[in-house]
Image (cartoon, rainbow, N blue to C red; front, side, top):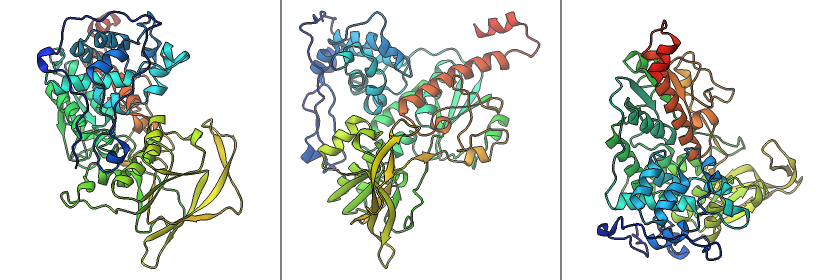
Length: 506
């Protein structure tokens, strides 16, 4: 794999935190939003290295100088984990990068991840005052910069933790929700063990998001940080098979948090989905990412390297699969989506990168049949032209078939990316745990509490497939609720007075 070095080197360790010298920039002199340097398109489609290089200190300081330091920062309201955005950006402008990183980490357990994959344009950045008449401050890029700076200089300090509480909590799943919940709980003094079904921690961060968008070394560093805090991670432990939730509670855990995500792939239900060369996006990306099939035979997992690959869907996962196919050698990587570009749920940045790299878009097209040859291998995809009608429940215009408009795309591989659902293993092995008609665990939105005593849940297993940062927000809220639950319900007998309960909570 080609190693591409950034165009700007970071400051040497000897000049990590100089005395703050920045001065406020006047409104008239405020610079435009700073672009992030990236690999040239012609180079990046030939490797799996990360596409954006990240800000240099000079670019980060210039971007930070754009922040108005609002007295009532709306951007914070748009952050699911309540990062002190003006505070950390002020530190960046003052060249105090380590203080900025520590401030972010005080509420965000995975800042290097969030700075890369979270949809800031729909959350914190959309509420930035500057966005009303121009471009918002690049909050996500600055978050990435400070977390990368701290990691690359080896100066990561651990935050203070509370004295040991004597309570034990099991966290099922090491995705964004589980890792965040574990990190918050261990800082509160609880003993935390994370159970991960796979052989690496990180959940969707390691099996679902490609290396060129989120390097696995970044995820590994974030997981290492949590282990340094005191979180214990037990791999190859699929709860529901190795042990049940009830058995965890019976073995000494005082509470269990379920954050197993939405990893069960959906298919379209069209003829031909059983042909050789048809993948779910989940399997396709898991092979390429977690199992490193792009390095086969150095790594033992193979993957079909199709020359003409069709990806069904218009979300971030579809873009990831299409860009992966290109890097695996496809001559034509084609997004097939039943609505128009404007209705695509993928991030604007991801669509832009896909277009830059030459991904083809067959829009207003719905697959109706996968065609196969005599040996059962994919040879084509039959589609139907669509037109947009009235908006549906999602607010997007409903695709309506154009009768008699069928056509065939010559492809040898099809990747289906039409969504994922919850794995039924834990609900099926946990009596008393109420789920929705779709199989998602029913949990309180504010606390993560479920129908089962001492059991909490959050993230995609509750909401369905969503974003990394929303799952992290759920994990953080659940950790606070679990902490309160342990202090009130486990330390205090049922006969405790209200005053005694208040004293325990304080």
